[in-house]
Amino acid sequence: MNDWVKAKVVGKHQWTEGLYSLQFDAPIADFVAGQYIKVGLDIDGERVGRPYSLVNPPQQRPLEIFFNEVPQGPLTPPLSVLEPGDQVWLTGTASGIFTLETVQPADTLWMLATGTGLGVYLSILRTPDPWERFKRVILVHGVRMSSDLAYAETLNEIATQYGDRFTYLPAVSRETQSGTLQGRITDLLNDGQLEARAGAAIAPETSHVMLCGNSAMIKDAKAILEGRGLVRHRRQAPGHYTTEGYH
Ligand SMILES: Cc1cc2nc3c(=O)[nH]c(=O)nc-3n(C[C@H](O)[C@H](O)[C@H](O)COP(=O)(O)OP(=O)(O)OC[C@H]3O[C@@H](n4cnc5c(N)ncnc54)[C@H](O)[C@@H]3O)c2cc1C
Image (cartoon, rainbow, N blue to C red; front, side, top):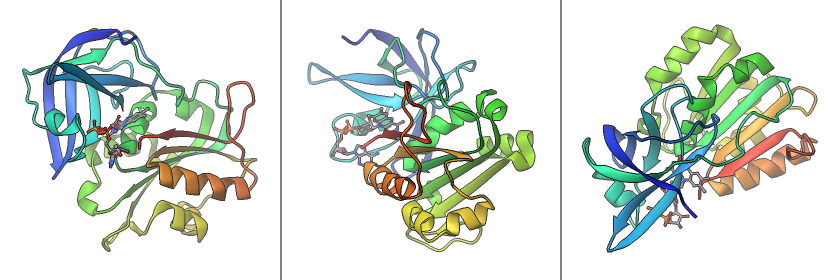
C-alpha cells in the first residue's frame, strides 16, 4: 500500500530537451541517501506512480528528482510539463537498499551511472558516509550526448570540498567531446580506459562498485566485474558491488 502525501512543485530545471529536475515540498519521513520515493499523478481517474531516487541529501530540502521524459510512458510526459505551484503525490516513506549502510569500507568507491542514474549519487556524495569509509570516490557518468551531462555546479562543489579524493569522469557515447571519455561505460571498463583515466584499478581487495541506471549496462558491467572476482554485495553477505536498475 502506498502512503501518498500531497506535495507541491517548488522548483523546476530543464537541462536539455527531455531532461528535467523537479523540486518538491512535502512532509515525507526521514530517509537514507540512496533511497527512492514514488511520484504520482492522477491520470484519467487513476493514480499513476513511479519510483525516483532522491537527489537531495537527507538533511537538505527541497526534495529533488532527476528524470528524462519517455515519450511513450504514462507518467513522464505529464511530469515534465509541471510547473512550480502544481500539486503531485509522493510516497511519505522512502524505500530501497541502494545505500552505503551495510557496505564495508575500502580504498575506492566507484559510482557508475548511466543517464539519470547520476542523481542518486549526488545525494550520497553530499553526506559524510562515502568520505568516512573510502579514501577515494570515482564517479563515472555515461550519457549519449554531452548536453546530457547535468549538475556541473553540484559536481564542482563536491570537487572543491573533497579535492583529489574525488574524481568525476564523464563518458559520452554518441559524440566526441574534449575532456570526456568517448564510448559506453562497459566498453571503457572492458578495455581498461576507465581505470587508466582514473589511475585506480577495480579489484575485490580495494574497491566497492555501485551501478545505477540502464539495466543493460548493469548486466554487462556485472559480468565484467564478476570476471575480475568481485561478488554482489548483500546485507547478510558483504560483497563488492551493488546495483539499482531503472529500466
Ligand atoms: C528503484 C527505481 C528508481 C528509479 N529512479 C529513477 C530516477 O531517479 N530517474 C529516472 O529518470 N527514472 C527512474 N526510474 C524509472 C522511473 O520509475 C520510470 O520508469 C521512468 O521515469 C518512466 O516512467 P513512465 O511512466 O513515463 O514510463 P514507464 O511505464 O515506467 O516505462 C515505459 C517504458 O520506458 C522504459 N523506460 C523507463 N525509464 C526509462 C528511461 N529513463 N529512459 C528510457 N526508457 C525508459 C521502460 O523500461 C518501459 O519500457 C527508477 C526506477 C526504479 C525501479
